[in-house]
Amino acid sequence: MQHAPSVWLTTANPAPQLPQLDQGIQTDVAIIGAGYTGLAAAHHLRRAGVACIVLEANDVGWGASGRNGGMAVLRYKKSWAALARELGRERTRHLHRLLHQAVDLLEQTVDEYRIDCAFARYGHITAANGKRALATLTADAEWLAAEAGDRAPRMLDARETADLTGTSCYLGGYLDPRAGGIHPLNYARGFAAGLSAAGVPIYVGTAVDTLREEASGGVVLETSNAVVRAKQVLVATNAYTDLREYGTDLSRRIVPVSTSVITTAPLPASALAAIVRERHLVSDTRHLLNYFRIAPGDRLLYGGRGSLTGRQSPEVYRGLEAKLRETFPALAGVEIDHRWSGKVAVTLDDFPHVGRVSPRIAYAMGYGGRGVALTQLLGKMLAHLAMGELNDPGPMNGGAFRPIPLHALRIPAMKAVAGYYRLLDGLRL
Ligand SMILES: Cc1cc2nc3c(=O)[nH]c(=O)nc-3n(C[C@H](O)[C@H](O)[C@H](O)COP(=O)(O)OP(=O)(O)OC[C@H]3O[C@@H](n4cnc5c(N)ncnc54)[C@H](O)[C@@H]3O)c2cc1C
Image (cartoon, rainbow, N blue to C red):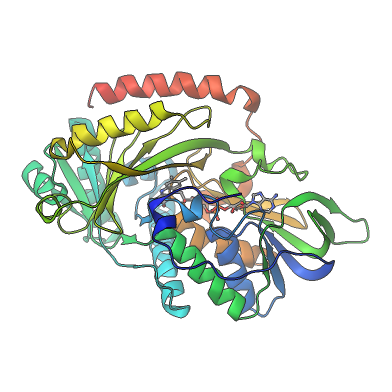
């Protein structure tokens, strides 16, 4: 299947030349999916000297990993203060350390494989749409300073937020200078090229159609053209887990939600001097959130909710364009030159999960639009799980990750929730 028509595709480095699997093969660990999770798992297995292969239905980075916003942010969906209330101080501190490890792993991988993906610690602004959201962000900065000794994030008043973002529609913001940004498809391609050069076989155009556990031990994977025998299987297919029904219930443990992105045509120097002039990555505090950053070719990238049914429609892009122009009225006449969509995997508790479906099949998934950094961490944990050792993933362990009741009714349920969220967002709390 073709890559999404994203700005990342039109500005990408060439894809590494990788084969399709066309004959039977045996390995210790077979990884399904060549996005960030699968590649990270392969990287850590390779380092430990464990034989592994990666099987990808489409192309490296074809899923969310090649078409996302490229923003490695240092926040979970829930605020720090809310997490501390829910999970206690120690577990929240642990979650804070894990998120920093995740962004550090991303940076280390870029360095180790010399990946040309414009990685930089651009910094991330969470821009508040309402007073309650601003109070939550302020409480977060205070919690981190008091309870985790982390004084790096700082609050911005409305004037500074307007100055740094180029729009006066926010009441203030929370700036974490350590958040990283990447060219997402170049990261996936560079990572795969590095692994392949280091001897990890990656097969593209090779969909896993069925998984069968054998009584004698091991798993048989039937792919489009050949059969793979592995001691263990790692499922790294995230929101695209339903691409092929290969016999686990994992696709019913997540809800795939479509999200859409547009970019403007290259902006003139005058606009670039005013809009995210220091190249920060920005997202807002709406339930149906919007985010933006500067993309290659001096374009403004602007993302938000996609179609609830997952079907592409011009209306979704019209809605996104209207939001962009509402945020930046000065861009009223600017042409939109890329429009694309992709799927994120939402979970009931807003955390991704790593765990096992059986003694031989493990998974990591459910990043909910926050996987650029967390995939590096959960991919590593997945590799360690395959090797029989899993460091404490806190609430991201697979314990509470079960098939969602009434999964078949998710689209009407999502429509109802989206309507409710639109109402809340309109109130600008
Ligand atoms: C538009 C968009 C914007 C986003 N922006 C951000 C952002 O700015 N910051 C952030 O942190 N996160 C963001 N995300 C989320 C982030 O991109 C994902 O969490 C992350 O890329 C997930 O990586 P993955 O490797 O787990 O899955 P994916 O990259 O989706 O890879 C899964 C792969 O599995 C393959 N596959 C599926 N079934 C099979 C099969 N049967 N056999 C073989 N292969 C199979 C698919 O072809 C696919 O390539 C965004 C996502 C989208 C869609």
